[in-house]
Figure (cartoon, helix red, strand yellow):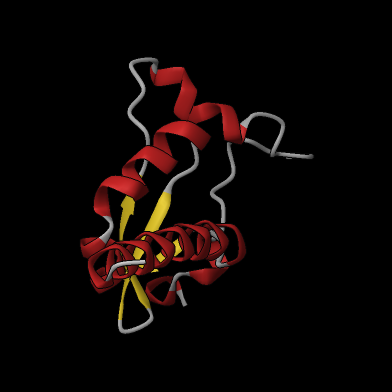
Length: 105
């Protein structure tokens, strides 16, 4: 094998490993990625978001700073996650969390 062919093969192997690692990172990190990693592979992340429909959280020094989510024309789509999330609410006219406000103490 020629030296140029070897270097191309090594480059291709590295790209395959990077892609496999990227897939693992997205599956195991609860869809979070650092800004530097996101910048380097932004198109791959966009494709992954489009494919899965799951949002991606971008972190800066470990802190979440940006959320990239798939676009939806349907405004009800955003509220679907909240459906059936309230189990029981006895008095809907009473303020919620009144005891949590320091100004009222």
